[in-house]
Structures are given as C-alpha cells and as structure tokens.
Image 1: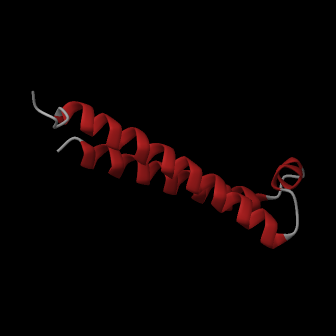
Image 2: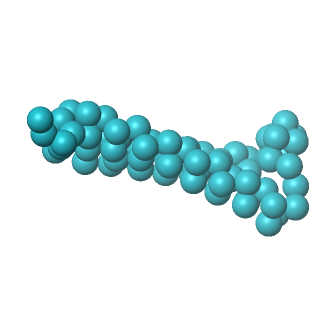
Amino acid sequence: MSTNLDPIVLNLLYASLGGLLGLLLSWLGSWVFQLRMGFKLREELQKDNRAVGMVLMGIFVGNGIGMGLIIGLSLN
C-alpha cells in the first residue's frame, strides 16, 4: 500500500489551508490597522468614513486575489 496522498486530496488540502491562512491574515491586517489608527472600524463605517471603507475594500480585494492564486496554483 502506498503512503503517498492522492493528488486531488493534496490539492484540496493545499487550497483549503491556503484559503484559511488568507482569511486569517486579512483579519489580522484589519485588526492591526484598527489598533494602529486608534479607532473602531465599525463605528467609522457607520459614520460613512469613505477612507476606512477604501482600506477595507483593499483588504478584501487583496484577499480575493490571494485566494484566486492559491486555488489556481493548487489545480496544477
């Protein structure tokens, strides 16, 4: 019996762990931003602060690009 993992299972594991790591790093990035700036992101978004909205949009777009790369590279 072979001890190697099936490539499909290995790719699924790689994509899942990479996606989870990407989400964790996005959350960490927004937390550090909130900590360094000294205000709560949720309160500023309720006040219609567009600069904070653009920063969060950048985090989401970066996360989407990262997920696309992770999933795309796991399909090879």
